[in-house]
Image (cartoon, rainbow, N blue to C red; front, side, top):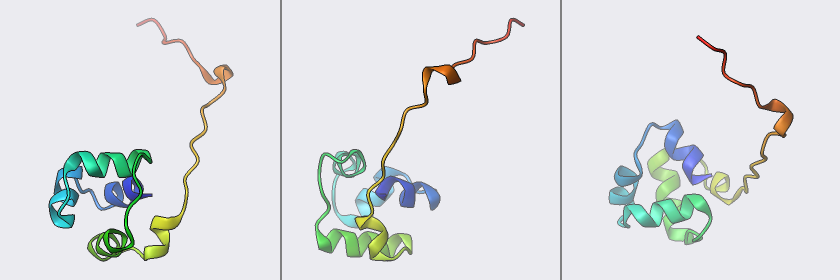
Length: 76
């Protein structure tokens, strides 16, 4: 949910990282699920992005579209 909250505020990873006192690669790992945010960082991010802390504890599930959704490009 970090990526969703950050992008909804039109903030870059670098900007969020500087505000939280971490590196851009750490933000990337939070967003990909490789690392978990500490409660302190969640509180700081929630305050900075103006969202409730509970949002950052939600899990997102991404689903791929079935192959039947594929469309060939039209010839120009």
